[in-house]
Structures are given as structure tokens and as C-alpha cells.
Image (tube, rainbow, N blue to C red; front, side):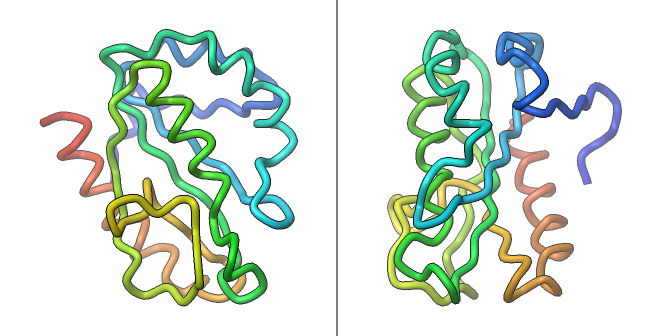
Length: 145
């Protein structure tokens, strides 16, 4: 896993997004709400996010979704953060394969991969830990090439 030194957890509902500017490597997490919507806390700060200059920073995204209940909007909210991070000048890292998931469609898929790690605690909770371990190894390489 990633080293704990220099890692800080921030809740988007409690911190101003300017706090992200203190970091060169940023991991953003988001659940997909209802049918492919951005979760309320992220929705409330999306305009503030658009004001950030993330040039020179690397951003990784993870998302939570339910592939069985929402196979047509699986983990869609991730794309809102991915698009915004790129628009703010960040380099997106941590793409994740779609293998092992069963869904019809997801906005979070680009070039055959998810824009970041997708976790499905409802249907594949037993895969969460191994996926996190694999993704952490990917991020170690991509955050510090």
C-alpha cells in the first residue's frame, strides 16, 4: 500500500477544495448516486473544483457503484471528477481494467478501461481488498514515475 507519510484524508463536505493545492498527488473518491448522478457533497463543490489550477499534479480517482442494481450507470459519477481534474490541468493516473465486472454501460469507461478503481461493495465485497492492493501498486508507479 501507499506509505502513510504525507497522506492526509480530507472529506469534501468539510474542507474547501483549495486544500488540494497542498498536494502533488491526489486521490479523489466518489460514490455514484441514484442513476449515475454525482453525490451531493461533490455536486455542491463542483463549481469550486473548476476554479482550481491542478497543473503539474497527478490525480487518481476511485468510485463506488452497484453493477447489479445499476448496470446502465455503473460508477458513472467518476467521470465528473475525471473530466474536471483534466480541465483543471491535472494528469489522470490509475486507470483500471473493466475485467471482472458485469455491467452494460458506464460513463467512467474510456479506451476500454475505467478512469480509476471501481469498488462494488454490494456484489463483490470480497474483491475490494485485493483490488485496493493492486491499485495501490499501480499508483506507486504512476505517482512517482
